[in-house]
Length: 320
Image 1 (cartoon, rainbow, N blue to C red):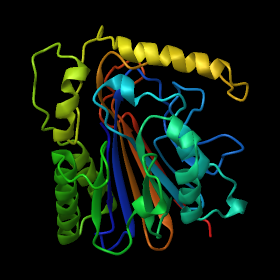
Image 2: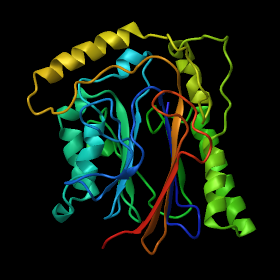
Image 3: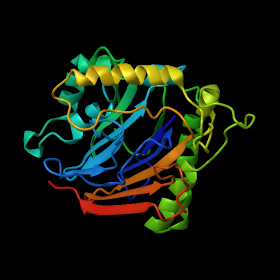
Image 4: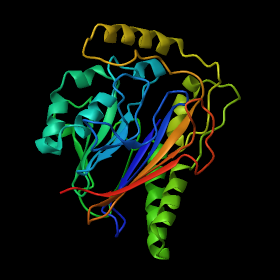
């Protein structure tokens, strides 16, 4: 269960976004980079398990930002949709800069979109740096159900795999508390940006997950994942979710019938070891300077990447 934390509490940064991607570790994922044409203005990692090659978090040279968290379901199979959630994120990030689409108009279209209802449940944070960000769910039925964040200074808001109004999850409340503390301590100590990154990585690495007997399945752990910001490796190598396998097979059959879908047919990766796979931090300054940092913790063979060896960092100024 992923977590995203959004803050405007640092006096030197107009926006800070940090994110843990929790996933089945064998799910193929790219390293972060600028995307190929015609989306060369987009920066982020990509999910390679589905033909869409969507992302859960990305930014653009024009300052667009998107962060997606899946909606919590009681079983892994219920979280799998006919279409990839990455399509929704891609539709915001990859639209041509010349179109100048506003956050409000995009959200309005998404709320009314039948396609958005055909993916697994999600919440999407979208907007532009230095502007208010919208949090929209495909469970939303009208614009009155959209939450806006980063609307003023000194706000910190967490989002995980539940509705944005659910304030019962310990990982969300802990995340907000520890992020505020990390920012406060950084400001008081007058530390540099590298130290801020380390403090924020420390927040993303806080592990309070209850330990169940060895070999406990991911399905059994699901109700406990809301208790920890960081998820250590859980689930066994041969932990197979047959229900998710069945849903994935049906999804592939559906996509075979759709000629507009290009690329290799999807496979199901809802089995095997699970945990926090990537940690991402976005730092935006009022002058338009943006830094995108991502740490990869496990490769696509579920092998641990030594700390630091999977780090990628990008800096650029948002185009006006």
